[in-house]
Amino acid sequence: MALRPHPVWTTRCLALGAALVALSPSGCRKVLEVTNSASLEEPQLADPAVEQFLVNGVIGEFQFAYAAYALWSGVLADETFADHPNLNIRDFSLHTFDDGSSTDSLVYASLQRTRQAADDAVERIRKFDSVTPASRLNLARVLIYGAYAYVLLGEGFCDAPVNVSAPLSPAELLTRAVARFDEGIAVATAVRTEAAASSASASLAAAQDLLFLAYVGAARASLKKGDLVQARAYASLVTNGSYERWAYYSSNSVRENNAFQIGVRSSMPFLGMQPAFQNLNDLRVPQPAVPRPSLRSNPILPPLRPSMFSGWSPTSPAPIDVATHIRFASGLEARYIITEVDGPGPAMLAFVNGRRAVGGKAPVDLAGQALLAEFRVQRGLDFYLTGQRLGDLRRYAAAGVDLFPTAKYPTLPEVYGSMHCLIVPRSEKAGNPHY
Image (cartoon, rainbow, N blue to C red; front, side):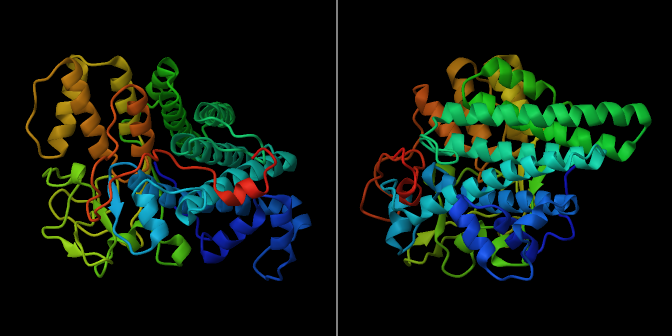
């Protein structure tokens, strides 16, 4: 079961969600000084009547941040490259950017806004002190979405502060993510138990849906920080293999658009598929039949909708548009985690061949390191453009398998640099005494 957008998730709602919190007290004051009939003053935020509004704001912030992260983390990994005349984007795509990069700063600021919006909403909803199942599920919801912001910060950034702290390592950020998932799990579990006892089917279904979302997220965070036992334990709790959770996008406003669309548009795109994902003839990662001229007039292959995007069809490839949704958590991810932790063997081979069949490929007969390599290939294909790849490449490299792109850039004479994680931008450093 997936959570669909609430009817009030409009441009106005998202703008207000952003206005509810800011990265610093001074930023908050500046927002609240603006006269805006669609925004609330600080005292109004203490009214329990705005609870759903707070929750919608957190999810709206997450969906914007998630698309930005999925897009640009793929450029920093080996999924795509940007053939763009803007020097900032060029340097980012070359993996040679610094802390003045506006692309890096966009990803950082949007994730930190999501994290802070969630932390703020948690505090406010707890102060409302409501004991209704709906309110308690809202508390679980903002805890879990906030935890996902910590996951993406931990997977993508070399390190990052929280609330003007000293830099936190990826392991510390991922540990904080797990702690928030655990809080959300505790709240949702209590609601599920009470709902089951009273036959409240709606609350029971909503609680179970949130639990699966938290289990997948906690398993992901645990895997990425190297706690394999914990990762498998969480993933094993996802008993619905078809579970999925989507990030939703629309044509309502630019902010609500799927961020990939501008890079793969029909005229003058700039986002091209990396050679590692070209010409694979895999149904999950379709590509155009012929290259198209980029913004710099070079022939590139802009990716079409991969299998984790709404509207994907194994027989009718379609372009990514502004309203294409992205599946960001699933029972499939849980199965991948369990299979990886269990290691190469008959179960992994069966799983790999099952995934190859989805891509239209014949089975293989592999074992040991060769099977692990094929497993990594299948994971990359299944989660293409979903924000998984950068964290995966970083952990593979730490284990001695470096899959980051090297040598000559696809459309430039320069060679790739060595930046393999996002960094804290200059804007954060300017106001943080720990830098």
